Length: 392
Image (cartoon, rainbow, N blue to C red; front, side, top):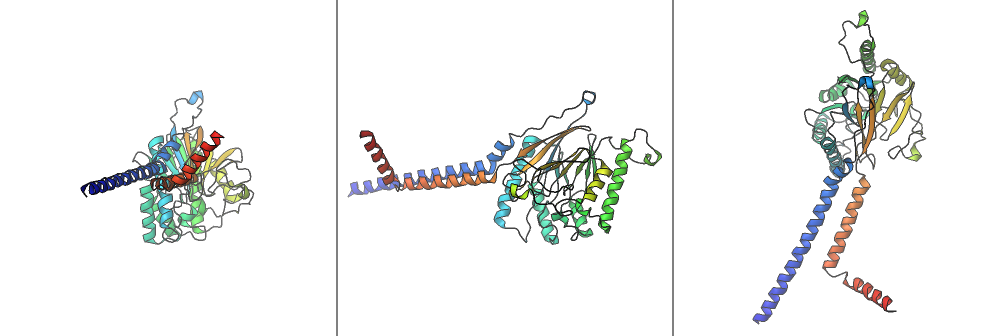
């Protein structure tokens, strides 16, 4: 009787050991997959990104360079259309991507080109405060890194939804500074939503601001300042970089190419002025008044490079969120007062992460079946069949 009890105890102990071993394996696999998909993959992907090398003429070799990151269209969901799982998944992706990029790439300034929020155009005061709190958590940054933001149509509404209240609410959180200079480089940040050209009060104010900025820039370009420039605070004598949400006018994305350009079936769809892009008139005014050397915009969620006028390059920055595309990216820029160089940095593909999780689930299923010997018969059948083939 004692021997029977001893044998039963040994079997029970053996069973417990097997179960604990299985549990350990399951925990190890789950932990490894989570660690890879939620942390390590961002480092592995962003480590491949390098700052471009800016070619500086010999007579300007002493110029300082500025490291700038440009991203767009984060579209943080609000209380109306936001689903908790979508918020959790996509916002975690943006947080890990942004924080990893800050740590690895060490930019000096980050520009976000509008549509920070998805529901800013109709969110209540409390919902707005909640969305701002989430944004500040996701895009937290050290004090020595500047974060500059321009307004998008989802932040303050299209022209017919825009109001003084929404603009002031946005500018209370994000500095309303339109002209920003650092290391001899001028940046002009435009509220492109207000460039409707219909003479509305907000549109007139926006145009007046741009004309004033144009005056300051023209004064900085004059070698011998005229009387009208005497009272102006001197700016660097550098053609500005124009930053806005809406792209300058173009007919469509037909001439855009690359992995993160618009899908082929969408590239030939004509753009609507004042909806998909600025109007011809507003675009011409901006180019004429500001004479920028480079334009960066968002809104389309896809990449594009367009030459305007006398060769002004415009870069459409793709969305930074998996919510809008499978392969988000951002632009890395090295800038001097006279030159610039740009490079693109891709984030992890969402389908790569999903595929990794699917493979892990399949592996865990096989591990469970093997543990409970549910795979023994098929494996034994295959082994016997292989032996039979060898002997014949």
